[in-house]
Length: 111
Image 1: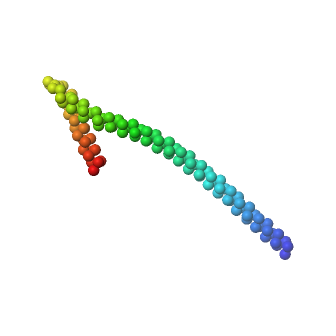
Image 2: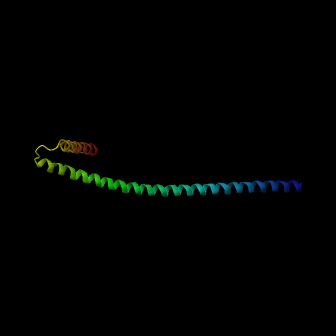
Image 3: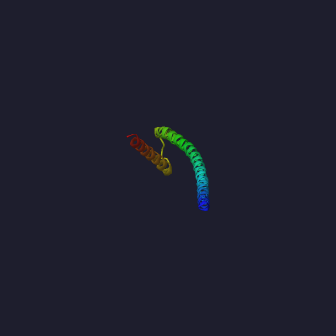
């Protein structure tokens, strides 16, 4: 009987040790996954900052164009050209068209 109790104790201890080893392995995997997740989040934060900075620069460029180009086109229209080269006239007409398209787009966004 005593031998059976000892044998049962050994079996239980082996099971407990296996469970401990399994828990340790799972904890290591969990820690590795958490480290990867933290590294990924840090990389994503860097990407967000990078794209925010680039977007801000693009917005500043677009805002400058929105302010400057219509004014410059008005100034060009105020000057009388006698027979401007065809390419120059096409370019000016295209710029005017682009300004109108920008105005339409801005109006749509505001609505």
